[in-house]
Length: 129
Image (cartoon, rainbow, N blue to C red):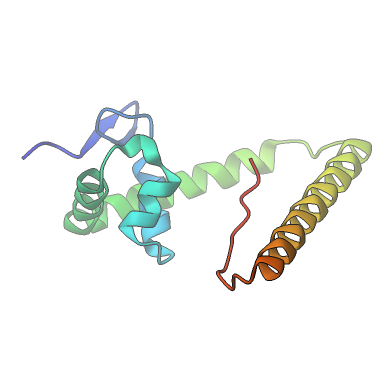
């Protein structure tokens, strides 16, 4: 049995990847299935690696939770030091986000209409690229 998690550069990573254990743990804690985690992070490579990472987390829960808490603290510290976006840029980004969401909703409506026309009732998820 191989090692599924490695510690390097002050963090935990899925062995042989640049995917942080944080990503897998947060997804797992938020109710994602191992299959869903693999779909979200295909470079993990296999379900075995996902289960291995989850097993590592569960076996080392106190250490990993301590690490995650420290990472959160560091993230908040960095965010507090960062200056806010200029208002004009923030507004432009907001408009772009709204347009992208509107386009995604339009695409869903188009696909749903085509499926209704073809007599299919299968649910379809549109994932923007």
